[in-house]
Amino acid sequence: QVQLVQSGSELKKPGASVKVSCKASGYSFTSYAMNWVRQAPGQGLEWMGWINTNTGNPMYAQGFTGRFVFSLDISASTAYLEISSLEAEDSAVYYCTRKYCAGDSCELDPWGQGTLVTVSS
Amino acid sequence: LPVLTQPPSASALPGASIKLTCTLSREHSTYTIEWYQQRPGRSPQYIMKLKSDGSHSKGDGIPDRFMGSSSGADRYLTLSNLQPDDEAEYHCAESHTIDGQVGYVFGSGTKVTVL
Image (cartoon, rainbow over all chains, first blue to last red; front, side, top):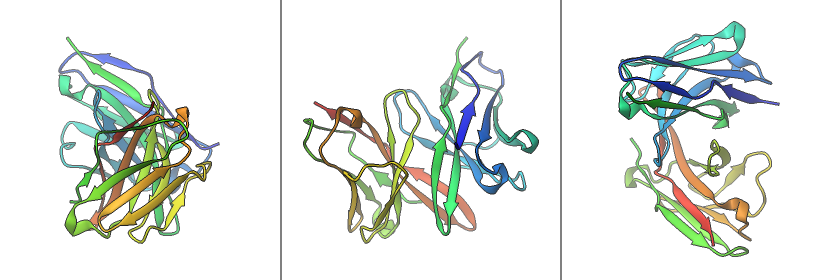
């Protein structure tokens, strides 16, 4: 079945970097864009941007430029989110989610299980 | 960019119906939205796409008692015959293209409690 499996929880110190992986299975990886969504503790969902899995071209939402990098390993059907110069405010659950399109209708489906990133000294 | 407004919470007894609201900013009142369910400790799950005319298409496995409707800038998700398993956060979202760039906006979510 179609699924996205993310890497495990991370505990990092301020200023460090973290790289979250999202491995896709059950479908053609390059057929659909991969989106990233952040959820801070007790907060709503915040769209971070997406990466074109054909070209590797990323697009970042406002507030997620500079320290956030989306990348791919197409041979491994895996998308990555790397965050550098971590701050306490980066502590959140990060989700990858496929943008599934059929005709002109698209939705975010499925979602990975989420990766908790905790930034603490 | 569109703004999606959701009340923070709602509650009802098992077996009752509950109507959740997602209000689009006035200038975006004709936009299509999506509803997502997020059970406690779980990742979000796609429920449905809902157009301004009230027509909607649901994701696989979404029960018939989940219904969508629209009125003006308001988009509704009605859960009938409420079950304990329906206790979750419900998020609305809107996908748009501005200057050729695709983006998503989420509402703040409504936490549903089954009393």
